[in-house]
Image (cartoon, each protein chain N blue to C red):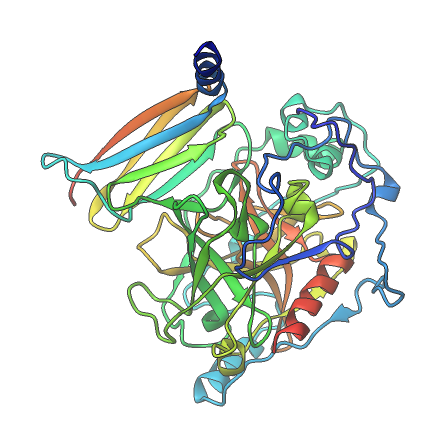
Length: 368
Length: 100
């Protein structure tokens, strides 16, 4: 890694440095410079201590959650809820899916105390979270693993139903004019959560010029139309410091486009390491390797949990950045991660930790 | 004059960009709205995909060096995969897609 001569604070103070973009140009000359992370950046225990300039920061794990809202009053809602409550599992019940495959995965014995030699391959990531993970015995095992399996993703055709309709296909126009596809999900009337690299693209001019949000898209069909926004949020840990572990953001829909009120939205939760490791989770989004604009679901256990990321073998492809990774529980859906990266060694998400939870809540409550 | 030449040389050597053009087999007309999936083979990749413009063009500036797998997807054409090593500088790629 190169150094720009700036030493970043060891504290991840993202709650303090929340950033927003309302579509109006307002930045200094160096705002779009290619920011390099400090080459000495390493994670220590105190690096992960949550801090805030507000006294009411949420620290307690396993209790922070918000009720999801199914929205509207259609019979589709009732049907979807009934269908889901027939299972005590944390997964959506998808007709024809062989859930036994989720049991075949090796049980984890991940501990963060293990200190096997750091693999140079992962060291090149420059990601303190992943470096920490690779120091563990489980991380070393992961390197030896080759993830090969049949593609058992399921297409969601009933995208007018909750929760599928709250998952949005995104068409992004970057500042440099290039076009991209991604995924987002509603957490409030006007708030769509996605990956940080969807709203702020370091190599393509910074903040996206505009993003078209298409909830419940089903191929060429846009059952609820679409809205375009250039009002974006992220955190400095992503826009300035380019940290993969801070890769999340939000799209704020225009005032006349309150999709969340009509369609409902996801809840989200901040769970402990123990609650997340081995948890069976859902992921659904708009992968680019499938027919254009179609939504696909998949599920697996979370195989590794780091202080800021989740790693799993849920299949994904380009276009699924920003997809929700969620747990189903008693008729409610709680997002625990925001999908960001793909790799043959395990796909990963930004974990909903206390400060992430707090920012999501702020972005939700601020725009109603 | 020397300053301008030197500056251009510096820009040339610093510039790191992968550019591509996607065309239809036979007609060589540009393929609009093809999905470009670019994954670094020895690392993880952001799960975002680029879409070709009306000229069939796409670009990845500041691409890190390394081996990549490029997959091009379009509903009307057969999927195309291409593995290549990007060694820095300016690299141009042409992709020809075959109609389904």
